[in-house]
Image 1 (cartoon, rainbow, N blue to C red):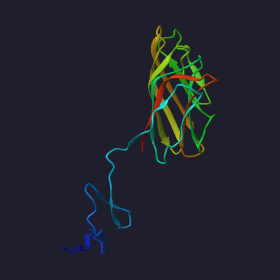
Image 2 (cartoon, rainbow, N blue to C red):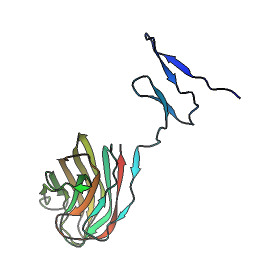
Image 3 (cartoon, helix red, strand yellow):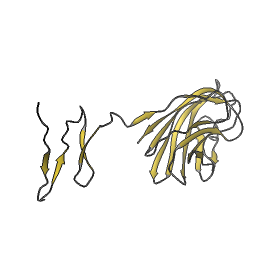
Image 4 (spheres, helix red, strand yellow):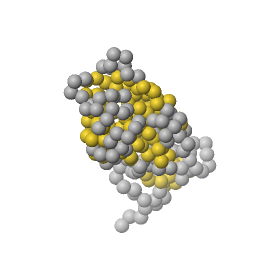
Length: 204
């Protein structure tokens, strides 16, 4: 039986050296330094994408995703034929401490199939315009961490009520009071969801 020996890597022009751990590690691991000359084996993730559990948007006034871990820098919100029982705008709210932030947003939205684009502004969330009770939304919206706790929202989704078909565009910004840990999909009023599903993809 062989005995593992500690191996050192000499740093050019320095008297000290990096000590390689006296273990084999496991397949696929890489050596990582802590910045002070200490090396350790680290497992490298095959992907930095995490898909949350898909939620049905068939009831209630809000769909919450509350298990977002620290360090997330980009969130994709996926909408699959999401609709409500009324004509209110859908609203994306993000939050910290498990609660949604309901003010301080700068948000603009518009659609391609309305004569004037049906523009809408919002300060209590990232809103998406759509004024048909029978309409549904399918597409992707993106939340980008710009710096610190500032988040940019952008994206588009299709809108289809069987008569009018078009594209809705969204853009906005908000700065949270702390690190983002939740996303809420709701409306500007009290309409309830009645169709579709929603999911998130997280990137660190």
